[in-house]
Length: 109
Length: 121
Image (cartoon, rainbow over all chains, first blue to last red; front, side, top):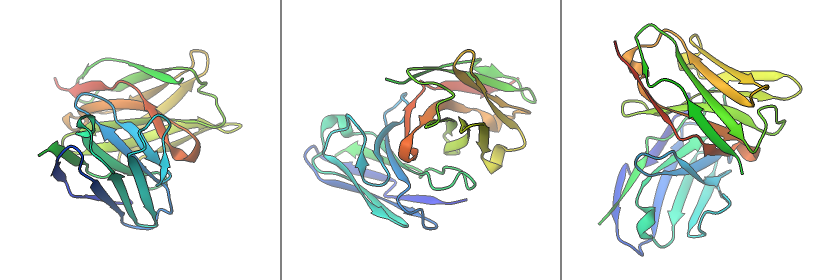
């Protein structure tokens, strides 16, 4: 399996802060990396695909970067509705399974 | 706008078969540019991709190694939906199950509303 490791596992921040979440793959996945936001009781929502492409309808304060094994999700100025759990997912290989990171819970400071 | 609507029982007995259906609106299960996925989520295993079905002149399936011996994902073109069957379930298969569309650039969106399936006698 391709292992996806996110850091940190949890994060406290304030409205208006700039926040960065990191995802590392156990082998190169080129740019086949998606980021999701999940709120309690809801399905994950796609934010970023192909490492850096913003999904339609997602605010521009969300951005993604990286390729190979190291990726980041940045929220430029936190809004109250951004407090949620964030997951990365590799979509490089179905032979290995489309594995997800363990999640980063973003909480209000 | 693509929408996915899941249906199926929320309680399954151990050793029996878990069966869920995902009805598609706004797209076709036979689309040449989409794949139709099942993903589950539990506190112990996190988000776990289970498999997908897709049509590229013929039907293909990909399955996660962890469930490959027990899973079947089938399209139903007459009803524009796809289904998940997971055989020989145990309490470890208790999870929220989601269906989801995979589009261009392997973006997985949208997702169904989720179905909590509990495996218990």
